Image 1 (cartoon, rainbow, N blue to C red):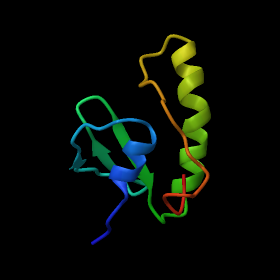
Image 2: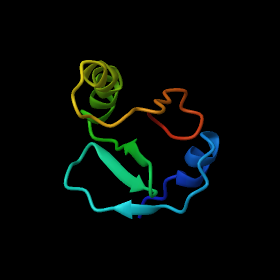
Image 3: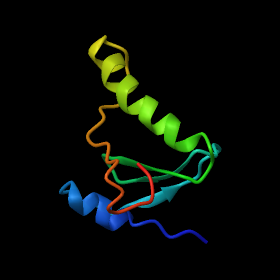
Length: 85
C-alpha cells in the first residue's frame, strides 16, 4: 500500500480541510480530494511526470482561453515532499 503525504501537501498551501482518496481509473496519478481541492500525485508510470508537466502548462492556458478546466493552484516540482511533481 502506498502512503502519500497528502497532509503535508495541503498544509504547504494552507488547506486544512479533511481529505479522502478518490477511486481513479488511470495509471499516471493517485488522486485525493477535499471539499474544494483535488490533489494529484504522479505515480511511477513512465508517462506520469511528462503528463504532469504538460498539464501544468496546458491547464492555465486552456482556462485563460475560456475553456471550463479546473483552476491550477499549485504545481510543485521541487521534490521536497514527493518523488515527483
